[in-house]
Length: 197
Image 1 (cartoon, rainbow, N blue to C red):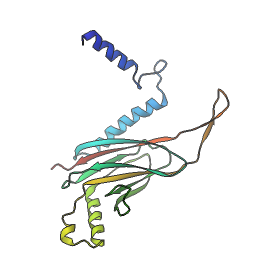
Image 2 (cartoon, rainbow, N blue to C red; image 1 turned 30 degrees about the vertical axis):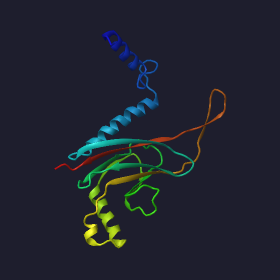
Image 3 (cartoon, rainbow, N blue to C red; image 1 turned 90 degrees about the vertical axis):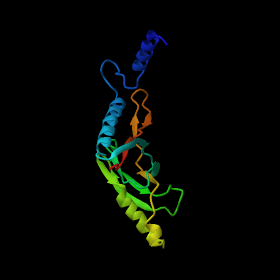
């Protein structure tokens, strides 16, 4: 590929980018929201220090007329302590709930390791050492012997974002006077790091 084709490719890419300005220098509210999420991701990653960055995930969701959950899974190195940094600045409406388990939602006997309610417009970090303690205590209560419990480790964490039900909102379309359903969205960012000392 010659230089002329490379330049044309980049010019096309830049002009067709979702971040390109519209009508002069104006940007749409959605483009502004995407820029804000990019900043939130940086803040989320910075909150991991001094832990070593392992990855991040932005979970987008829409509010519906019923409560529902979106589940994500993260793998962890068994003998390391992890820090989870959550940034909920992208949640501008009703707060969501975060629940962290040792197994996916298809299992009835999973252990709740962490829970936080009404999360919106904030950021916070948690570490897995408290979750490991809860996990071991739950196994003791289930009758596991102490020598078995002392060797138990978490291999994966299953994080459930529970999005609350919201009432349906309509706007009137100015062009034809019809009612249009307003879709309310949000996003939460998770960055993961481990203690590499």
